[in-house]
Image (cartoon, rainbow, N blue to C red; front, top):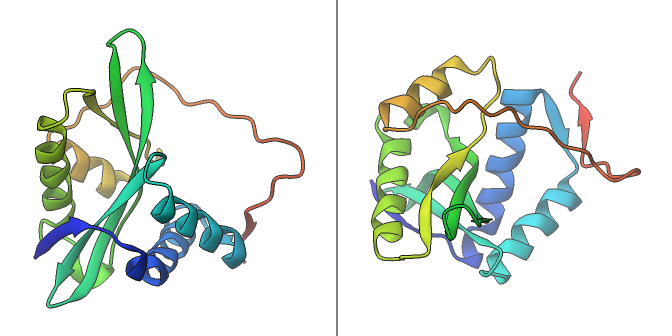
Length: 158
């Protein structure tokens, strides 16, 4: 399994992975035009974040997205891990662990990075176990959000 930074040629697989992950974990069917625009935007605006992919025999087996959150308390960036997806046939083979280790290596070279964060569905116990096994720990924080009126990016899957 090879881990590398994603490039624009990975856009279609990243779009498929994001859609599959949303359907599997949250039962949400993403609007293709919205997720496509989002993936293409990030691939072309590296200051906003980046994707990392895991490849097996030139086939993308998994991916994750990283975005920045500035912490004034730490005078550094947290890297938020989002859109984590490993294709079912490649799960339980260390794919997430390898993706995460790759990020740790990149972060070790960047003094502005102070740590990693991610959010996970409360009921997604297999993912939580994977994150703990990789060295992450649950925090005491809850996540709150508010979307602007009219923002729609999915439909509930039936």
